Length: 165
Image (tube, rainbow, N blue to C red; front, side):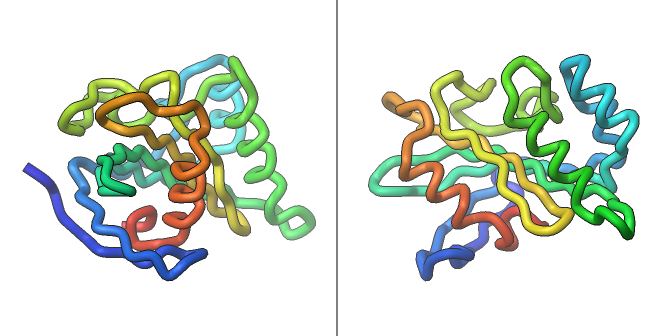
């Protein structure tokens, strides 16, 4: 049973998306919900303010897209307000460093999926100290790795009520 349904307008377009949220949570300590030595060390030294994780589906071009999003932020310093966020983004984008666990990895519910597939669209989008880590894939049929339509969708959903509530 879905948690909620919402319609959001893209932040970079006027496209309206009908999003079904299947699961979501908020975590206070990102390091205890992470994997990979480098990521766990980083988050231990630079705690996130908290993180909101969500699993959802939406129709796109006649197919159903599954989405995982993790939204968080990091405190900076007066001299470098966004430096920690930039370091997190670089680490999240690097191969073999780990990540904050997506909700599906920690037992969240998303009909038709039990793990994020290796072929999917992955992006890390940020503004100021806030950052959202996206994974998107088609629930049926093949998903091309870094499919342009899915990467564009992730960028368009950034800073919408989908990623913030």
